[in-house]
Each structure stands twice: as C-alpha cells, then as structure tokens.
View 1 (cartoon, rainbow, N blue to C red):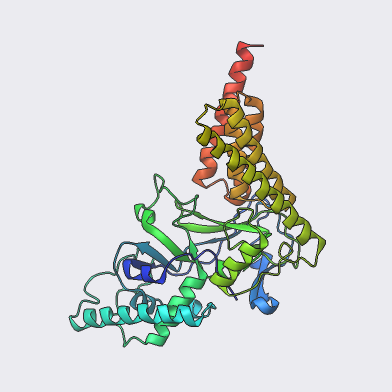
View 2 (tube, rainbow, N blue to C red; view 1 turned 90 degrees about the horizontal axis):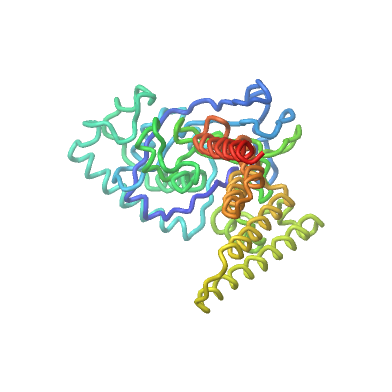
Length: 405
C-alpha cells in the first residue's frame, strides 16, 4: 500500500515550503521487553486489498518500539525552495524506495498537482538557466547526507508527470509532525531547525496500514529527530501492525469514513467500522453516547455564559472532570491507548488537583505516565516532563503526610 497518515496540507503550500533529504537509516528497535531486532519481529508482505502491510513474526509486547526511523524527506515551512530537484538528488537507492510507495490520486488532486508541478518546473528552469543550482548547498542537507548530494550540479530536464507522481507519493505517505503535540516546541539540545518542520516521510513506517482501533502509535521525537512506532497493546504473531491515520477523538463512523475516503481513497473495514459485527455496532453506540454527553457539557457551559452567572468553581470542575472521565471510559472500552488517552488522564489529574484530591491526582498522573512510556519511550521529553509531574505530586503527598500524620 500504503495510504498515509495525516497529510492535511494544501498542495499550494508546496510553493512556500522546502524539503530536506537525509539518507534512509535502518529502522531500529529499542525495547525493555525484548532485545530482538525489527527484522526478527516484523515482516512486510501482502495485506489483501490494502496492498502491502507490516505483520508481527512473533509476539510484540505492549510498549515495544517497533520502528525508530529518520526521515527520507522533510518538508519545512516558509522557505521557498524546490521539491523535485531535491528528490532527484537522492541516491538511486533512496529514490527507488521513495517511488515504490503508493499514492492516492483523483482527477481533482491531479489537476492541483499538475499546476504546482508546472510552477516548480518553471522555477527550476530559471534557476538552471542562470547556473544557480550547484553553487550552494540546498537547504536541509546535513552531515549525514550522501556524499553525492552536492556533487550533482544542474538537474536533468524535469518531467511534469514524474513531478506529479512524486508530489502524490509525498502527500499520501508523509506524516504531519509539525502539528504533533509531541514535536513542539523544540527542546533544548535538539536541532532548532525542527521548529519549522511541517511534514516528513519515513519509508519503513509508511508501510503500516490504518485501523480506527490501532495496535500501535507513531510519535515524533524532536530531540533525536526520529519517528518512533510503539505497540500500544500486545500484538500477536501473524497480526498486522496498524496505526490510526486520523487524530483519535472518538469520532463517529460516518465522519471517519468521509475523512479517510477524501484523504486516502479507501473505505475502512476495521472492527470499529464493520457494523456487521457486534463490536462495531456497540462501539458506535458508545461513541454516540459520548457525543450526547459532550453536547450536555457544552450546553451547560453556554448556559453559564448566557445567564452571566458565576458558576461555582467546584461545580464547573466536576462537570469538566465528568466529561473527561467519560472520554477515558470510551477509549478504554474500545481498547484505544496512546497519547490522546495519556493527555486525558493528565487533564483528569489536573482537575482532581484543583479539587484538592491529591491522591487521586497522583493515581491518574501515574496512569498517564505509563501510557507515555508505552507509546513514547523513556527517551522522549514529554515522558520526562510528566515524570517530573508525578515525582512532584509524590513529594507533595509525602510532605503532607509528615505534616499531618
């Protein structure tokens, strides 16, 4: 396959972005569960109508880091440059890897991308005519780049059809890491240039297919500049590794289907979307109930504003906590884990802290920390930040016990 994760970006933005290249690094597996290599744990093979997919060759325990991969191409914001010439400067092997990825294309997207490709081609022709290619390093090349990256001078004649294909592949297979809650802001010790990253393509991870009930999650680590995929539950031998291409928000089947069809060109047939199964129907019922609860919460908040009355702070916090815990219950009943659930647990901890329920706040924060360890790893700065929060809560509780034995 692979229809790709979160590529919500307008094709016209290509005119204002630049791409950087780094040679493919072999995916690494780092786990406290198993010392096995990715090659011994997973394999890429046929996945029916989805094309190719990633499958477990052995049991992959929850929290295992399946992939740890640097990007092949990285899209930056607000730096006018050229996409296709930079792609041409990839090594032959890396370019073949890129072009082997599949792409979702429609007549509408092709029209837009032909226009974008045409503008780029004119720009590149102008640059070539004045000998501007090859005089300076193209933005984004680094010390790890292939030695021939800057040895190639003016690119060969650009094919518009090839350019359209390349844009389609990048759009269909790139990850939106610029809006990821785990990638911003750039932390101390990381490359400052990552603050402008919008999208990046990770060819190994791009083989992973979609499910609305995934068994893995991918998150970008700006400190290491790697995209890490972790198992969010035990993955059985022979089971396909799946990611959710959509941001998990408890959306209804119709909404999910529309976004997947529009963005990736397929109808999801995962257990959550299969109403022919009891699990699919019951899951949708739970999501509908969640929607009604949220509507009630919103109406209550709007009523507060319309009446211009000072709602009791404790009542307001209790209502927000009730809605947050309902979301947690929904996700856990569906078997969904990951950063979204971790953030909800941390929010619930914060609300309990507002109500001076320190013991419950600590319990919820520890739940969030465990989820972060499983889906981010202990080397991620967000995990370290939440670890400090948990340690702070424990210290505060210990001090209170000493003061009030």
